[in-house]
Length: 147
Image (cartoon, rainbow, N blue to C red; front, side, top):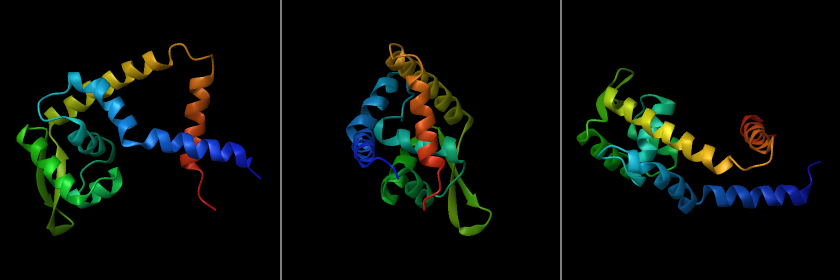
């Protein structure tokens, strides 16, 4: 049985990590290198499409944790900036898929590289093995099927 105190500490740490202000702090660290159209709100759509591939606005909203109307509005802004395009869903003629354009994929590469540099700076002074332990723990937590 898991240590209840550790589980409580984990719950609190995850709660802090998932707070919008903490996600925003990570985004703010990289958005200086973002192209026009990418900001705190649109970044999750851009990044989500890069991770998940083409999705409807509704499905993407569910997967990245924003509301459907927000996903559509943010997609409009990214489309206007030339970073994504809409196309008919071949499996459902009523649905529209959001797809990254080559410019959108290039923007994701720039932003992910900036985030990697930022995180490398944040963990530079951590004790040996601590960053790897965090990575391993997150993977165990996410990849372990629920009871």
